[in-house]
Amino acid sequence: KQEVTQIPAALSVPEGENLVLNCSFTDSAIYNLQWFRQDPGKGLTSLLLIQSSQREQTSGRLNASLDKSSGRSTLYIAASQPGDSATYLCAVGDDKIIFGKGTRLHILP
Amino acid sequence: SAVISQKPSRDICQRGTSLTIQCQVDSQVTMMFWYRQQPGQSLTLIATANQGSEATYESGFVIDKFPISRPNLTFSTLTVSNMSPEDSSIYLCSVRAGPGEQFFGPGTRLTVL
Image (cartoon, rainbow over all chains, first blue to last red; front, side):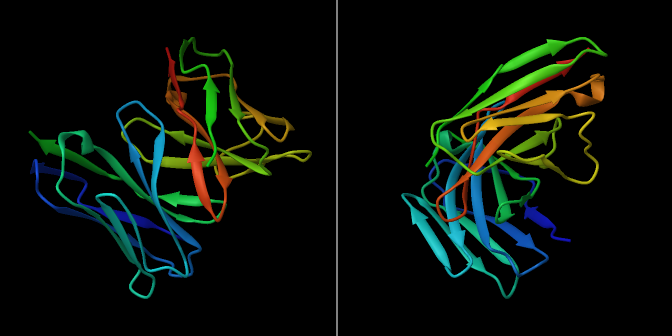
């Protein structure tokens, strides 16, 4: 059974810092890994999708990497801004996706 | 990508009643998914809704409690039946578009008194 773990559960950093969010999964036979952002009381916004044959994806200040052999993914956020404050969720799977519990990120102005 | 809308955005309901949540997608999709997010928790898949067939429910979820309709390729409903305070959650629908990317609706925040 696939399990997804995200560390840390919460993170507060000063504005402008670069940061890394971690995601690990137990079953390396995954199809896709997707990072989402969720603002309080809101739905999910897709940030990056890494397909199983890919190693990383980049969008603006965000970079996500995937290492299937070690069962890990990282989301790198460069030059953090207060607007980046949200919960970041990692999810693995194809049609049925399994979510981690998320990392609550707070960027201090 | 896919643009998804949900109705209602939020509701407060009495114990024992039922609520039907609607999900509309701006393009035709084969599968639609319904998730629940309990307070302070991550998302859990309730069921997969295919057009023209019965929904497929995940362990711990049953059709009598969460009946689903899928009348066409752009629309689905989820009913939360005989509600109790434990059903207070955010309910989200999602679709898969393109090479595996999933898109989510804005969610329906349900509070059961």
